[in-house]
Length: 460
Ligand SMILES: Cc1cc2nc3c(=O)[nH]c(=O)nc-3n(C[C@H](O)[C@H](O)[C@H](O)COP(=O)(O)OP(=O)(O)OC[C@H]3O[C@@H](n4cnc5c(N)ncnc54)[C@H](O)[C@@H]3O)c2cc1C
Image 1 (cartoon, rainbow, N blue to C red):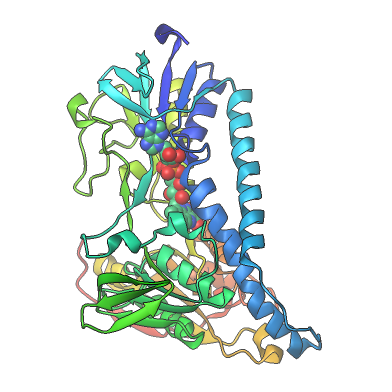
Image 2 (cartoon, helix red, strand yellow):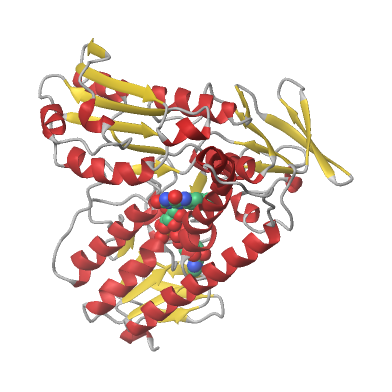
């Protein structure tokens, strides 16, 4: 494609880049998208999708056990990791093809190449070809952060490799306390591995509501996951087929795999953005305005590379809004507030809005409603697990500003509760909704007793 024909050059065919390219092409733009790995990006190839498939696999372990309480007799179930991974890989290949086909049908040209900036107006492909598009969109996503260098780091895997292990490790040590770490802890635990989770902070899921963190930790520990907080892995030694991970207190764990899930970092290395005048945030993300425009007017950036809220729906919304703004003549800012999100841990977590601590700091007067109970399905199953629901309410306006759920289907529930929170529903409006009985979700509209009324000096 000659350079004068390109209106938009998208670097990165992940969630955000694919959406932006398709919508821009739909507005008649001539679009080229470069991908150095596989079309679909992190979410489809090595993130949300393969992760959720492994979560489904792991949850069968409970289902088989719980079925007995409901009268089912089962011979001892067996599990075949290689079979699961092969099926998962087939599904990922199908999705990759579907993404490529959708791009091609929209008229987007896909280039399977790394792309970097030669200067502010020129993109260079790995074969040396140079293209001068009207607009450049940086949609290069993020990559696992390795943490400080430690002896034996070469033996450590990240989530990227965890999806392709030859066999299920019988013992695994995972370092990290974020959502990817707790999700993989649940996956390996469910599939039968002995799991140790090591996190340097005081409790897992930093940034989530403290009650959610405490509840999830207790539930994970009940399932036999060994959670060690306040420590880090200081070295990993390979001894024949096993690894010895030594922690900061010199305790040592012999395991079959060591995985680090220490967070993710914007993929900007070697892109030469700074030479083109693109500025960065303090978190090393590409700095953008509300319309995803960088400090260089014809260069835009969306999704994880901006390191704001690193979730697929955010990257997709950023990409769509960018195309509407630049090619659809509809300037569309993206609202990054009150983004509902789920952690596919065991049990699941779903949250939207402010935590209790954030609400106290911002609002001053806050009412808290919370409840913990044994979900009905667990009664005949005889499973010792509890669900947790919490509403954070602005005491001055009665508005529900936060909703936090831990328990089965929390991710499904929070999508719906998110609509009410985004619409600024009040607690009285929640309560006016008739309960759906018998469900767990009915707790959202039946919590009448305040657990706490907090009054503090508000920050704003
Ligand atoms: C294990 C895991 C689980 C996750 N689970 C969830 C979840 O449950 N829900 C959720 O919402 N989010 C989840 N995420 C996050 C989600 O995957 C990301 O937020 C999302 O993929 C970001 O989209 P993006 O378009 O910004 O970047 P990406 O999807 O990362 O796409 C960027 C693409 O750019 C390519 N690229 C990079 N540099 C270049 C270059 N120079 N030239 C050409 N191509 C380049 C990369 O190969 C990649 O394909 C998960 C992430 C991980 C790692």
